[in-house]
Image 1 (tube, protein in one colour):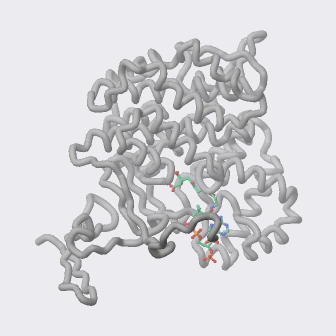
Image 2: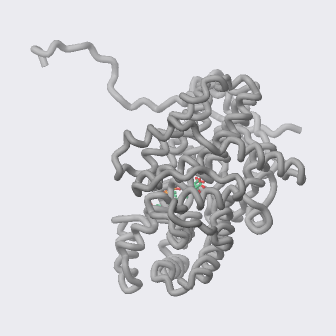
Image 3: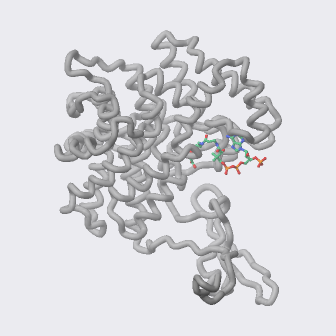
Length: 427
Ligand code: SDX
């Protein structure tokens, strides 16, 4: 028996709206006919109660702190899988067998170089340009190099775009870093793993052999897994909206990178480190928390639109942070100690408890990235690198949906009534 919701509106007959259940999570009220049948819109700025689409990729339960990629709990993937395998899972919807895994890894390797002319783009940027400004530019510019495969109605073109994004984004991310440091670009090395390759392209110097630390490689690969996808977050919704107009996948990913840059979203990991630097010492925490409660500033790395419990990724990130600091003999890292003191106070303070504000994925990630040697300015670039597979998976799911149409929200207009033009001499 299908479920219904009945809307009683003054001056209208009761309106029956279908209620649809998913595989997991909240039911939805299907309001697609609402405007046609009643002339009314719903009103939900920030989409706090709105499902924008149907998806099979990622499931989040904010109250229970659950996160599943294609049904697999994030804790199991972080423990037993690797980032490229998670890319296969997000793109194809299942874990690969040994043959599929090998073929996919070879396919990605085959696309990890960029056209040599792309290196010229960087010279247009000032040396001190923020790496995210370069990323937005060069990812969008990829469309200029693949005019032969931008027909999004062609499944083969869609598939190769997925490989190109997953394969080239680490190469371009490392180039942003190298350019900002005045260092020569490193080419990818196909004898290295995906993550070791990124570390090599970031840190290898022409003058000496670069040896990847396997503990740091594993930690960074896990950070990529934790950031790979997260349902309809702001940047993924941006990619879907851009893609709904038929824009090419590189332009859509560039739009996602632009949205992720904001401090309320992917820029939070950079903002956490700046916040820890500003607090400076545990003795200043009380004064800082007073400022947060007076809303003079926010506790960056805390709070989440969906998680009203601990972000499951934050728990794994904290464990990873501990492992990396131990490996590097930095257990007494003052920033980590300050972060743990902040977390302890926040988890016990009624202000945060009442608002269900818990550490999110960004609270500890910056400390780990710093310890690995990645500068603060590159934190959101690393987030964008990892999230690119989520963006491209959602883009593909949307474009492949035969019922897909351009996204075009309406509004509540509260501006001026109609009025006639007045000549400037009469104003
Ligand atoms: C990511 O959507 C995703 O999935 C994102 C992400 C992903 O993987 O894609 O998970 C990645 O973006 C994680 C979030 C990173 N951002 C930050 O850490 C920045 C700090 N956090 C906040 O700005 C905030 O918590 C948001 C933006 C994350 C969520 O904001 P909401 O859901 O819109 O909540 P809100 O702003 O309505 O706040 C509710 C209350 C308010 O207090 P009152 O007005 O009720 O008194 O909580 C307060 C807010 O002032 N509050 C905070 C706070 N976050 C919310 N107070 C202090 N510090 C904070 N961080």
